[in-house]
Length: 262
Length: 154
Image (tube, rainbow over all chains, first blue to last red; front, side):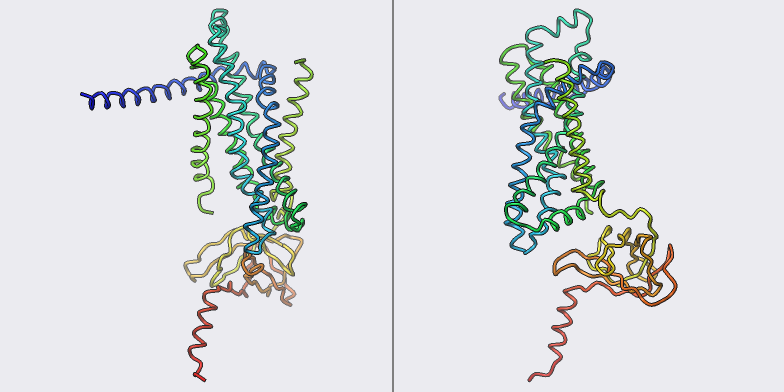
């Protein structure tokens, strides 16, 4: 009998998972449909841009600086063995612009801004603010969800670009200022190796995709959270875990599409 | 928070993000550097291009004068056809010599142009007839070993 129960449990889980994906997609479409007001009343979006974008600035800049500095140190140690220290700039810039910038910035964004979004919306639901809005014929998706969604989508590429720029500067600080790699070859080799369309623009596209996914997961988890203290805390955890995994998996897929054999 | 302070912060955030992007494009990427805007196309046939890739630089006397825009195999002559785009500011004689060279021992490969003495210049769609293939290290070593084996024992 227990074998049947196990299979029944697997079936239940599978149906649940598919059902949640379906609800999330419907949620995404509703968000897009009702996002007109977040542009017509752009002030709502600006307020969210402040809490998602501006408040994430410090963590992004500090993390970018240190990641760049570590890349400079480690890259130098490795490249030194082959006598090609002058390629340090290329290594730092390519790894930041292609991978680390979009991915690490998105991971930080998910834990800094995504968790806050989930907790905020979950609490709104728990304290019945959302039901009150519906009672006053205010669409909560248009009023609460859409501005946050667009704020996340707008700020993610900007944050990733700042992360990469600060990271390159960190690599420069360690490589050129501290260790003494030739400054001219650091910049010129970097410039000849990094292509605007293939590397920088693809990085920006990646961070756009991450922005959509992270913000959507955070908003959906918040909106879907059981209206209890436990439910909100569980939803916040799920936001960070799910969006981190989604970022890493999506990154692999996007990289495979963008940089396939050239 | 007051409305104007909020606007100020968000404005600064957006400006900083866009500035970072522009800095990446100009200082890190190749958008601000060499760009063949006004170019003419020539091509050349090589028996072996070694590790030459598209976007490799074309240098003359060490100065970058263009980029490789395409590499294909010509199935009529079974040779590599390399398309090049050269800056219009630099004109080369018709009997220019194209070499595939390597920067450093392990560096990337580029095409070096050695100008000849012809009075006529290469035009758009022209062909560089005199070429020398890439030096493939394995072939070189193979030849060396072969020659050594042929030498009479002392």
